[in-house]
Length: 583
Image (cartoon, rainbow, N blue to C red; front, side):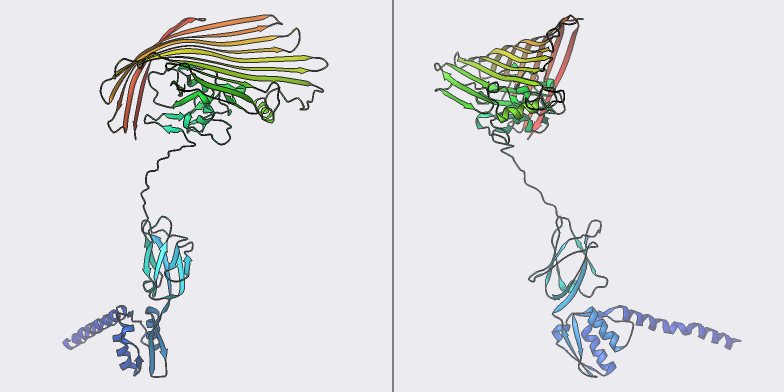
């Protein structure tokens, strides 16, 4: 029985003697060995001889295949090393190092390991290039073994790798590329759109007319056309009389000409600016953060200022285009008094130019007014239109002394259209007239280096009159008038090198009249409304010593009283203002 147990123990322990040797054989097969050392073993085992240069085999290793035949071992050496093995006869073999190899790889980014397609693979010093496919792979043949490979792609750092590193890999070696981050230098635009346009530190935009250039498509430096090229400003109907700032309506813009509020700013139904650009000194556009000194400008403030200095000599000019002729001048009467004037009159009522015809067609393209030669489905219709416009302005500059300056300004604009249609049975007439008359004055006083005052008053009147006479018995007359009178006084005091305190008072009286009269049936209506507004405003401004940070905050208190309408009301409106800018 004991002998029987010994046989059982012997049979159980017998496999254990073979396990270490089997594990050692697998380990020897899996690990890499030096090629030169293993060749010596093959020479003894298969009774063969290898001829080679020791330097070619230096540092070369390969993984021993599972098969122990000579052919499989030599094939493994060829595949895993850049060696060429040539059989001379049954016993002798020649081994040399390949100078050209086949390489492959897969290009990935090192962040998400996603493939990079269209990466450029360039063999430096050779004319061998390729781009990766959709899976980021590439393959190159007959590449010098000592060559350097450059892998490039937009947005990634260039990767350099040797050709030898890309050989003897199955599957192809993965190459990770790092994203390239580049810090861009600050770009300062000095001439935005054209010359003479400058963004101020408080985010307002100033147009310097003396340095002003002409935008493409304009025949002269039209200020109201130019501001529509600024971000956030456009006109939905492509006119200068209907400007929309950041989605607002035109009546939400405060348009000032020498401190006078303007209700009409364009000729030819808004296609041409009504302000002569050659007498304008600068235009300031404020789209947000408006000062508490301004009221009504919910969307923006467009402040147009004419020349405010007395010249030593006469300056003037005249011009003519296919729409109008104009003249302007600045005449110094003494070293303290100067006169400015400008006038413009259209030639459209006695000369039909191609420019006028195109403008006329654009304005009345969606109305009953057509050109004379355009056919009409209703039969023979004789059409006649007579349109003209003019404007003239003047300014008196009087310097009382170095600290007090008086300015008187005046502007008048007019647009007239007379249109008639005549057939055998009827004679229709339509008349349309737009006029704007404004004048005002200002007194600027500097009482000390820290204390300044400004007094401004103006009167402005805008009329829109129309007559429609379809027959001798049927007549329609309509008239709309806006009349405004205003007085504004403000004082500015410097509290220090960085602080400025502004206070002021403004009173406005605005009257609106709507008149309608119909001959048949007899009807007449005349509605008038008057609003009186008292405003107090106070504002504190701060500017850092390095002039990079500007802060402005204030309040405007409005007391509105309706004097004459269907119902009277009083209302108080408080308007906070704040403007912060850092550059």
